[in-house]
Length: 115
Image (cartoon, rainbow, N blue to C red; front, top):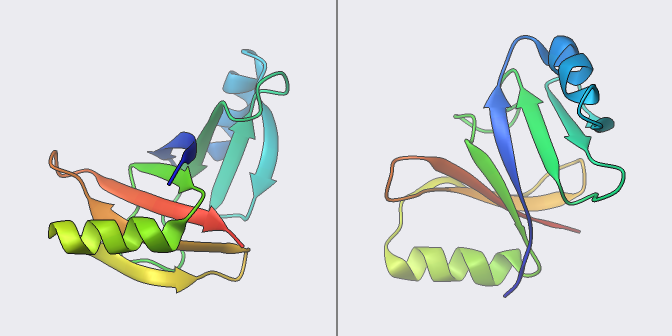
């Protein structure tokens, strides 16, 4: 399994202001679902940051997202390790398959793959 990108998820009620602020550093909006907005560097598209008012389909808001090339293998590895699955593996309407897991520091990680 390979990691494709890691994105910090910042819980925020100031998404538009954050877009303007990080735009000064060269970030551009690449996704906006209303409840989550992602900014990326045009010169390095995997360099991203997301701002979220809360997760629409999960009970908690993750601290970071990790995109992998095989989310099913990642889910199996985490379950077999005994890690706490916070949100079960499921397909989302916006084209990702994902689950949430708690890391040893108590942080919630959204592990995803695009379908």
